[in-house]
Structure formats: structure tokens, C-alpha cells
Length: 296
Image (cartoon, rainbow, N blue to C red):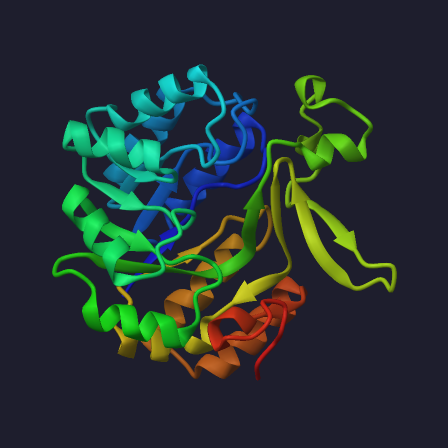
């Protein structure tokens, strides 16, 4: 089982992004996804910057992929997506079907991202025919559904599962972070940069409910399937994905690396990580329950 770092979902400064990926060069990570997947207004890094980071990480022994935007709304975004797919050096993570189509036509190997709604065998067969080398399960996928799909997935198609981080649940044409500031989306002043891990949203009772990240809505609690690593291995999951955070990423990577390699009891590793990060956890979707549920 390999360990992957998904694309950064938040709006960080150029220096913060470069420093984050410099730190990954030294960590026991196998796969790294690079690129902006949430909002095209976040232009701190150019495609050339992403390619430079990709080359550095590849030289450090990592498998690198360039990720595309999830919600395409304009011709300029389509042009950027085509440039990413046709970068000439790296495979891509296709996060919408337009990117899948462009990659298939160009013969570029791709990973089918988590927002393509791959919930059945027929979808996996189609994606494999189009050139997918791996698929990422949707956030809501349960163990029962995953087990059935693993039994019948196309030969050679790898499976990846999101196992740590605030889950990206929905995308909208509206920017909720800007709306909270009474700013129009077209003049948002990039206010999402003020929230390096998203803006928390609580219920009237004070319960952590959701996190707003520009046009993206995330789970309020942090998905953590570390205790399920042995089960995921038994199911034949090839890659597990961690979502980047602004703090404690080294400890998070180390915890999952230890769980994968069997360096300690998973419950002890889980408990230690919980004390370090200090956030409410959840794993309900994996057990076919509400996502915010914690199954002990």
C-alpha cells in the first residue's frame, strides 16, 4: 500500500506552498498531487511553478501528478486544463469529465479524481477504457460498496481512498467565503487566504458542522481512517490519500506510514495522532452511516 498526498485545497502563499513541498521531499510519501483544484482565481503559482515543484519531487523519488480544476466554468479554465493535461512530462488527476476526455484523446495516463462519482463497475470499466490507471473513491463510499467494486474492478486499475483530512463534499458557483465578508465573487479580494485550513462553520448549538473553503464545502470534522488501514490492505486498496494541512503534516504522514508498515499498534498510533492534532475525528461514511459519526 502506497501513501499519497492530495492537492492543497486551501489558498496558501507561494512561499508557504514551496516550503510545504520541500518538507515532503524528506517524508516517507510515495505519491504527490500538485495543482489548484478549487478556484481558478488562486493564481499565486503558475503552471511553470507547479512543473518546477513536480520535477523537484520526482528527483526526490516521488510519483508526481498534476491535478485539474474540479468545477470548470469558463473558456479560460478549459484552456488551463488543456495545458495541464498536455504538460508533456507528468500524468494528471482528472477531476471532471472534460479533463478525462482531453486526457483520453491525447493518450495521457490519468487518475480519475474523487469527484467523478465513480460508484459502480460500469463507470470503472469506462474510465479504464479511456486510459485511467487509478481511480479515487468518492468521499461517501462505504466499506460494503468498496468491497463489491474491488471484487470486479478492471484488471490493472488501481484503487485510491481518501483517508485523512477534511472531506471536500460539494462545489458551488458561489463563493461562500466571500459571501461571509459581504463581497461579490468577482471582487472577493482572495479573502480565503485568511483561512489556511478553511473557515469553520458551527451550528446554533456550537457543534462543528462544516468548513467553508471558497466555492468548496468541506466536512467540519476530520476524516480519519487510520484504524482501518489493515482492513483497507485486506480489501486490496493500493493507495491511501492524506489531504494537506497547514500544521502537523509531518506527524500525520509519520502516523500513517507507521500504520502501513506495521510499526506499532494502530489504535495506539491513532490515539497519539489525535492528541497531537487535537481535532474532532469522523469515519461514518466508511461504515455506511452519517459522515460526521465516529465509529469506535
